[in-house]
Amino acid sequence: MSAAAEYRFDADDQIEHALIRLSQLPQDVVDQIHEAQLEHQMSFAEAALRLGHVSPSDIDSAHAGTRKLAVIEKRPLRPSPELVIAHDPFNDRSERVRVLRTELMLRHESGGRNAIAVMSPGSGEGRSRLAAELAIAFSQLGQATLLVDADLRRPRQHQLFNAESPLGLAQAIADGESPYLNPVEHLPHLSVLTAGAMSANPVELLSDGRLELLVDQWRRRYEHVVIDTSPVSEYSDALAVATLVARVLVVTRARHTPYKSTREMLRRLAATQSQVVGAVVNHF
Image 1 (cartoon, rainbow, N blue to C red):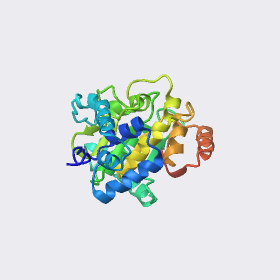
Image 2 (cartoon, helix red, strand yellow):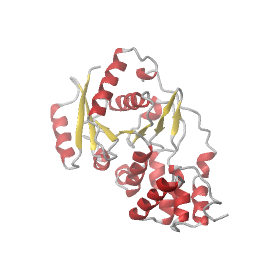
Image 3 (cartoon, rainbow, N blue to C red):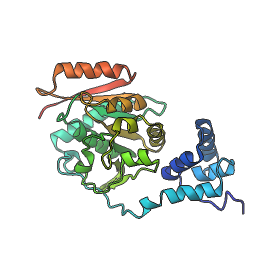
């Protein structure tokens, strides 16, 4: 039996991310491994081993680095009653979210640009709730969807989904570890990555090259990636995310969001060269 045959692993993003980080694989090598994966129908670890870019000990180290995730019980998260679309598909708000979903899908571009950042000028404008409902709507089509909470200042998705795990995006980037993706009760096609424990340097984390690597992996694995962000008028974190994903949904609140705040946000967004694919004005 060949060395490659002795190592049979699932095509798992966690092991892939760990191997790329531990072995410092350049992007051209990663692309070569992905081509071998498709050609031979094998996992990333197997393909990398067959091509000689990693060793069996590298694979063992990658597995060891992800072991602590295995001891955490993957109890499905429960969407809160606030997320109406998860509980009442006939509600008027649920229908409006589905209409938005359809419009965004019609504007979807080919070439793997399947991630979208949901942004707002300030707080209290309904951005996080809409991001969650939009992710749920995508998943209800039977399409693999990932919701990411990249608001590392005042995260909200863990509250909307009753999440208890302290592991989240901040830890995945800071420690170079695989992110803990939560399954969701009654929504088998949806996964949620919470923000995790509070960080002292959010903008530095979101500007880290490891986030770009994660986004690339998510784009390959999921048909839709929805990313919640921090208020643009208060922090520059969201601009770092917009630069990576290149597609933005803008959210404001009627009789609440100052016009000059929206204008300033759009001005700052222009520097990221992101495409604004839609705008929502919340009334509540």
